[in-house]
Amino acid sequence: MRKTKPSLPAQAADIAMQMALRQISFGAATVPSSASALPPVAPNGDTLVLRRREWLLEVMEQQRALSPYASGLLTAENLSGDDFLHSFYAPGRPVLIRGAMTGWPAIERWTPDYLAERVGDAVVEYQGGRAGVGDYELAKDRHKRRGAFRDFIALVRDGGNDAYITAYNSAANQSAFAPLADDLGQIDAYLTGAPGMLWIGGEGAFTPLHFDLTNNLLAQVTGTKRVILIPPSQTGRLAHRRHVFSDVHDVTDPARIAAHPQARDVLRYEVMLTPGDLLFIPIGWWHQVRSESFSTMLTYTSFLWPNAGHENYPAG
Ligand SMILES: O=C(O)CCC(=O)C(=O)O
Image (cartoon, rainbow, N blue to C red; front, side, top):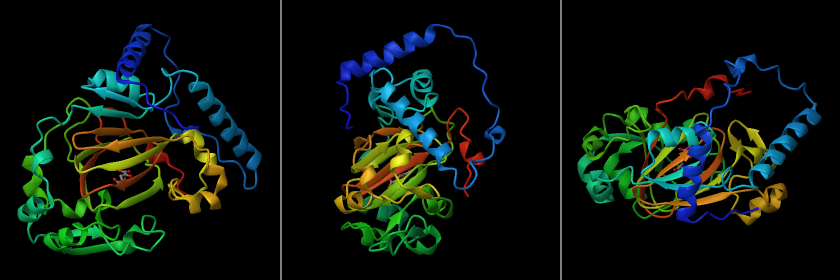
C-alpha cells in the first residue's frame, strides 16, 4: 500500500480546504484529562483484545485513505503556526515544511572542515562501536564514547554507521557545541526557542525503525537523509516487542522482510530531507532514518503546545 504524494498545488488546496472545514464550529469534545484514566491493560494472554484494537486501527487507516484531505504526507511552504497546529500538530499528521530555515548561516557553513575548525579539540560524547551490532539503539549506554571532536569528524568524514552524534548525546555536548549557536536561527512559529538536539554523522549512519514518545521536529542543516514514516495504525505488522523499537529494524532490507513477512505490505511514506527542510513526526509514528551523505540535523521537541505523551507511556 504505497502512497504517492499529491502535487504541490493539490497540497496547497488540501491545506486550504482543511482550514476552511475547521472554521465550521463544532461542539467541544470531551477529552480525557490524562492517560492515567485508561483502564488496565488486557490480562496476559488476552490477545483477542489486542487484535480487535489492531483491526480498528487498520480499518480507520483504510477509511482515511479514501481522501487526500484526511491522509497522505503533504509538503507545505511557509506554513503559519495556526495552520501547523490545526492541520498537522493537533491531528497528529506528519508534514514536510520548506522555507522555515531560510537565512540560517549553518546551512552554508556546516561542512566537516568548518565544524572541526570551530569546535576543535573540545571533548564530545558520541555513539560508537555500532557497526555489525544489531541493538545499538536499544543498548544506547553501552555505545557511549568520548573523544576530541576533531577526531570524531575524522571518523565520520568517509561515511559508515560506526560513529554518530545523536540526540541522546546532546546534554553532554552543550558546552562543546556552544561556538555553533550563532549559526542557527529560530523557528518561532512552532517552537518555544529552547535549543535543539544535534545529530552529526557520515553517509550510511542509520537509525532503525522506532517511534518517539513526543512529537518531534527534524531540521535538516547539511546533507541529505532518507526518512521512512509509517503510521501508528500499522503497529500490528511491525513486531513491536522492545521499548519503542520494531524487530523489523529496517523495512527496506529484504532479509528482514523475509523474517517478518507481515511487514511487507506496510503502509509507508518516504521523504528525502535536504538542507533547510523541516519534517514534523507526530508522536507514535514509526520512522527509520538513513544518512545519504555527511549530515547535520537538529531535532526539537519544545513545541508551543502540550507535548507530554511520554509521561504516561507504559514502558513495561
Ligand atoms: O536522524 C536520525 O538518524 C534519527 C532521528 C530520529 O529518529 C529521531 O529524532 O527520533
